[in-house]
Length: 116
Image (cartoon, rainbow, N blue to C red; front, side, top):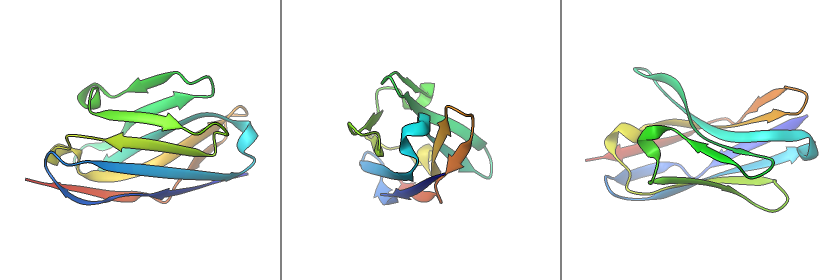
């Protein structure tokens, strides 16, 4: 079992920055891929960024160059550094992990609101 706790969301002005954190606990050695989703009523759920157990990263095209996903050495905590935020980044952001056994876990979500 894996538990994920998201934090770091808030209200910022356009051009500002936030860093989201996701702390994993439980059977963390079973985690393969971790990432961040975001969800809005209009756009639904979209995958923002992922990082594999080997450190390979992928990003949604609209956030490339602005967002950076990273992890600590023990793979217990994953971060999403968000710079130059835009109003269209406003969403609920969810941490996600998938184990080698293809079990999926989600954080509770953290609200990011970007004002203009």
